[in-house]
Length: 334
Image (cartoon, rainbow, N blue to C red):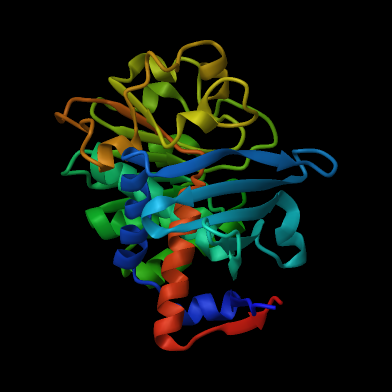
């Protein structure tokens, strides 16, 4: 019997590996470029809802990146009340496989991967779609992905002003404290959406609403801004798409009609965002196949739902760094 050994990386290993901002961005951008060049398979996510979606659910993401010669499946739980028992709202496991034989090659705690790759897609979206002189960031939400949104965006733009807001004061204050410590700059904490978002150059909505509620007002968006909403439940107004010069997504297969959840679900169902009105997927821009921002006056919308390919790429980068640094464990599969 041929022996099969699996690389296992737990949360402590991931922390020890300490991927740099540039390493994270490079791994995720490689997946975006591969997607743009049609060298990926990204299956639309499926959901397992044990009781009700407002309490929590599981997302199952499946992807293949040809340029890395690796396939993967990630299962991530998203449970809003986990903070009450001292747990993050999202906990995840990523399994990597050989696309040639189906042999499992790695099992990875993907909780941090989920946060990092989401923040990287947000930041890379801004790299291609925001004004180069963007200096004010408005960010609503303090969920796990929010930290990496702000950190990686700031890595690219070095903002003069970062504003944050979330529903619970203890969450937003703790979020601000961590950001100030890690970024070395003052964070403005607001107690309402408008003060956080109005007039910002880049506006991020990463909330966890129990049901669709139009908290994000279109009138707060200045001309030339970049808007990135990605909450599970929509927080934006129905006229949001009316003011946009360009609209982009990460993967139309996950954003298109017939899928549950998402910040622009109502806009897709009504035909306001469609294959005809969509400018591009971000991977097409990253690969140089379609233009991103072309002038400072363009008001641009980028909606991302989460790419399995970026999970796979970041997982592969972690495994490679772990092998180079002798971190992690090897588990015999057979």
